[in-house]
Image (cartoon, rainbow, N blue to C red; front, side, top):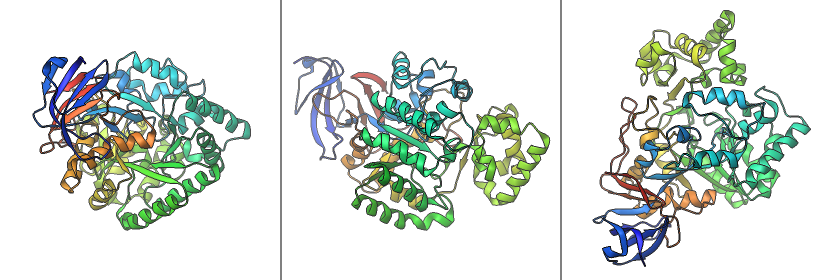
Length: 503
């Protein structure tokens, strides 16, 4: 048997959680051809001696947002340099399909900074466009509820009518037939924030017919955390859904940190009732999303584009400022960090807390939102380190970055998770005492099982998506001040047997 590449003297962590074994790995035509104790270098055109490094399946990012960034920067350096070869995207209700006259203009504005024309309409045509760029990381997009809803009825905050719901179900059915693993909700965002339980259950029923999965950025990840999980579970039982996945599971806000034991108990209770509940998590205690989520009350029902338009009015801007001051204590801004913005005079302050940038952080926030709500993002440091470490240790928790695939020298200033999340997840699990094979399973076999992917294993006949790493040095080194610092300890990454990253 002759192959294209022979990887010699590797310790194989095969993605199943099975004990490490030392052997050689032969690949050819994008597949794993053989796994033998010893193979001669003559078995392949190229031979690489891994000298006892760990050879694992290419890592699967269980929660990413590279739908457009992979088309703009197909080299996907920030992900492939962490060993990531596959990403679950279309998360938090935002997917790049289905596109109609109702939502295309809005999404073109949202994605404008990527410089990619949205020339597709459905999942299949999106994947064709993505494949044409030959990305280093394979995108596996869910169908996003916010995009789906807006495809039928735009971005207004209103309940669906029966005919509109039927149209949403038809579009969802098409996406699932085209291979979407499931449906993602982003119930914190417009227009998903307006969805009723009836709407959620009706869409879940379509997913259930396909035996798919539903993921959710919950309505609340803090004060109403348990209630938000229960809401989704009740809808799932009504719909006959069997699998539910919590996106970036966290206990946000110090007063909610003590809820973790109750959350674990609820997860076990739901499992016993027949609902498989899994989650993903990034290994940081600062979340990141649009700065606009800081606004209270009715402001949350506006899209970012609609918010910008409304804030052009002086009276509305003053009202927003007063509402924000009333809703947030001064200490809030000490944990709210500006990550990215298109407002040129504030770009030098990216990475700093709003309390460090201006004497009146609330006024600064309104100014940023009035000028560039669409592109202004912030990180919110409201999480517990202890809880994060507990969550990533759960056997039903997959590794996820919640970040974008970016070029090595991107003009963007991302959350450090874009360049470091999975390497950092692996480091923390090993430091917790997890066996290498157990930690690798959470980053490969587990997300493959959750989303039913035909990858995530080092096995003869599987795709040759592989990564080699040094378990002693692997770590994510990116920070908010230096967010583009590559991960350490990732030696090589191969996509379909082709080297995409190596030092």
